[in-house]
Structures are given as C-alpha cells and as structure tokens.
Length: 377
Image 1 (cartoon, rainbow, N blue to C red):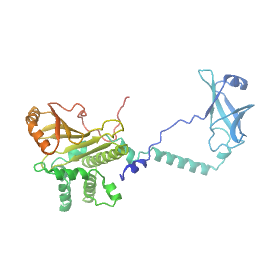
Image 2 (image 1 turned 180 degrees about the vertical axis):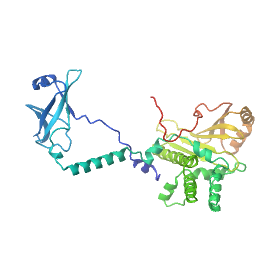
Image 3 (image 1 turned 180 degrees about the horizontal axis):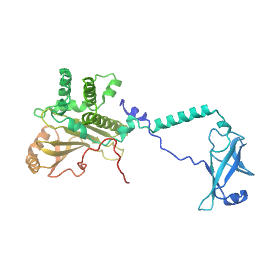
C-alpha cells in the first residue's frame, strides 16, 4: 500500500452501494381504468420509437420508462400492474419479455453471467484502503509491542545483529531525552515512507518498515505464522497505516491530525497526537493541541493536554490516576513555569486532576479483527 499524499486518497475505490433499480412507470387512475388494469395483472407492451426516443406502447397509451440497454425497437415487454394505497397505479417492468438484445447463444449468456458475477464480487470486496478507513483508531496492539523487551523477544533466534540494532535504534531513552532528538523523531513521522520514496528522498526506518521486516524475518526463519503473535503484528501494522491514512485525509481538508507512538528503551511507550483545525477567514485562529498518553508501570496511567495559542501562550491540563503523581505535578508547577519562561513561552494555566481524562475512551479489551458487532444510531 502506498500513501503518496492527498492525491492517493482520491484514488481509493469506494464500495459502490447497492441500489434498487425499480424500472417502473406511474399510471393515473383514469388511464388504468381505460386500460382495464387490475392489481397483479401482467400486461404486454410494444417498444416503439417516438420522437427519437424509445417508448412503451399499450394500446393507444404511450409511456416513458428507463429502458435497459438491451431493449430495442419492436421488442415485446411485459409489465406487472400494481395498485398503490393512494389510488395510483404503477407498471413494473419484468424480464420475461422478448428482447432482441438477448437473442444470444447459451454459451454467450453463460459467459456474460460469469463476467457480471466476477465484476460484482470485485466491487463488493473491500480494498485495503477501505479496510483501513474503518479501522478503530488508536494503537492498542502497537503499544503492547513497543513495551520494553516485547518486540525484541519476537525476533527469531539467529536473526542478524544488524536487524536487532535497527529495531533498537528506533527507541529513545527517557533518562536523557533531548529536545533535538524528540524533534527529529516527530518530524520523521510527519511524512510516510511512501511519500519520501515518491519525492526521491532518503528513506529511514519507521514503524511500518520494522513491522514488515520483522514479519518477513519470522517467515524466513521458519517461525510459525499462525496464532496470536502473527495476528498481533498484522493488527499493529493496520493501526499504523490507518493513522497515516487518516492524517492524509484530514490534511486534504485543511486540518492537522497526526498520531504516532514513541518507544523508549527504559520506559513504557508514549502515544502522541497533534491536532489543529484549519483556520477560517474572519474567525480566531484555532490552537495547536498536543495530546499525550501513557500507561506507565512507574507513573500509572497519565494524560497530558497542551494547548498552544498565539505564538507563545501555553495551557496545560494533566490527568493522573495515582494521587501521589497528581500531587507531585502540582508541587512542581512553579518549576514548570520557570522552564517554559526560559524557552520564551508563557504558561496561561496548569490544571491537574486525580482522575482519568473525561473524554478518554473507556478501557476495554481490544476487539478481534473481523468480528461482527451490533450498532445503533
């Protein structure tokens, strides 16, 4: 799959909705009485050419009707009369008439039917893009893989040390995290590998590259491809690609919506989400919002929302499930203010809550891919 930019989304083949082709004509009650129609009656009409258009002629009456391409002048069409509750009548076109366009051999008809069935099956088959568009948002599987030691344990025995180093190189270190290193990591996720390839730019390892590399190495080394491990890898890849596709879609609409996960060698992974609605003329500029979330074995589950408006105004909101972590954050508020001022930023507000983030999705078991669920609108 290639995410080449906004133009790639336009090329997504959408599933064509199934529509009911009625091919019917409404008949006023006086005309139906003149024709002697009764409910359920099947009548025969002749296809005639009237003012350069094909019409259906029943006795002296001529009707317009969306005709199929195979209907020709002189064909005999059959229609079923139906009385509606409002007193009007409809004539429903049947496919039991005699049509010149259908006078073909049985072999030709069978070939046409097979081709039609194949085309319909392909149209209804969800493409990779369509599947990703309905992928549940979030990185439940990817986050589990990025916990320290989990992804490394999935590398088959005897795998090249070069691959192990490539996997390790994608992790940051929480103990000595530097702004420049974090900046490089974020910028690397601002464009997909496919987009860089299309622009002939240098390609660096990213989440998708490593996941596909790991899956191929497991297959090459003879690892069992069935079971929870392989499903976990595939589902993690779905999450990463779905997030990239959503980013491209929203960017085309003028909005920023960038999500990814930062792995660490000495800490649990951190989910990051940058969002900013597109500005509209005559309206105040929308703030840039940076959301972070981690379920740390040291700090517990923590959410942080940073809202940046104007060039330097910053508002912070933090939610922590553990009371000691929330209290520690409140005690360090003055130090945070000093650090921001040193960077040329102004802290407008800093709110800390010993509670889960209100708009956070309810924690539940990750649903299995392909399961059927009930929905209600």
